[in-house]
Image 1 (tube, helix red, strand yellow):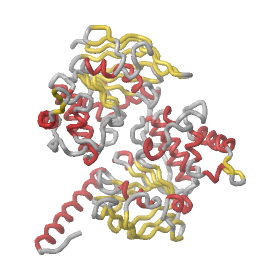
Image 2: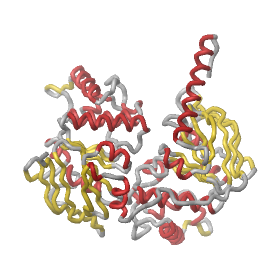
Image 3: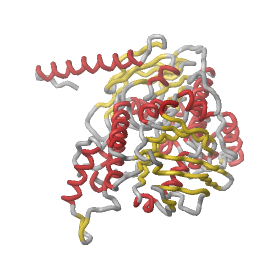
Image 4: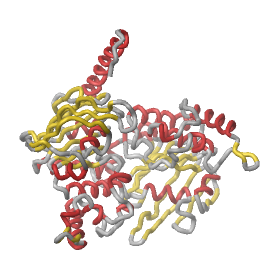
Length: 522
């Protein structure tokens, strides 16, 4: 193979921070090259240098692309050479159709008039290439995240992509959608499309990558070939040490029931369908309870509806916290009752990115920083500094904008915000999504510490090994219902999936029998 891309001695600085220092990266034509590193290691910064987000003249070093010295001053320059980057936050306009998104800024037009028939036809062909059968006129916002990710790749194909960069492409996808995306990457490789993937999912890297480059603290640590790739080697190079156990050891001390949910029912806020049906579970003091299920099983909807009824309508059921009936009629009431919820979407719903750490930490408990009814910025900074130290948030100051932090440190700020409300029960929805193995381990330690303090922790995760490695008990959800629970000793990935499949077969039989008898089945 010959090198399509060489990045030589790349350096990039921001005020007070050296983000990249003498980084070298060589990508061969036709390969899938993975870039690994902890959050904040410099992976995304390096790709922004390559794609022209950080234009020539703002960084040190050289980029050689297709045997020529490259000088990209914008994304348009890099795209003209066939370099397309797909960011973790998808750049699609939800209200526009697939076709409109596909050619946005690159419209199919003649003399200034868009040829919609041609646009729709081209869109259908591009969608077929990525395995999608969707009407080109359907608004993108009505599609799931997995399909939106494929549309982004189809957009890249519309621009005659030669080098495709995927930044955490499977972070928000369920297992089936992730597998389809990885299969597509291998198909594109067979068609000659060179690819760079940034991912924290090491099993996926082993499946598709021909080579892996590891970056740590803004410098290149190693590049390994497919035969050399092992998860232990990648982790050691990423964190600078061996990690014998992915999940910290813990001896649980489980006490009395702290929270009990009975007969919880929720209707979709916009559609006439029941999303949560007769859900019930308990959380004990000192326990980490897992909620497992496939994407769309209702896990997040259950959590959000419990937390101050912030999602859904026609909500019925009863919740008791410490034996008392809990008022969860609003978010502030839920906080007062001792409940907290860490959302799966920290950037949109969990944090105010342009604001400093200090303001984000105090946001859910302003009375905690008030003196005689007046907010004290000094007290706010003092509280935030305490959490910065306790949670090991890597930043020199609590006045740093949260948007400038790595994903793992942002997650610690979200946790700090809710811990400052002193909850009895903390619901964590995908708490380690999009963060590296080192930061994950720190989050796991925080969860263990909370349980050791006698709090109840509810963990929702799409990563089965994480659920199995961290939880004392696991409730399994399917189609909006809790269909069973497993103890730590009983639980396995096979046992969870078998429970879901059995329930699906049983429910399918009930629906068919009901339809056959002319009954209306909910």
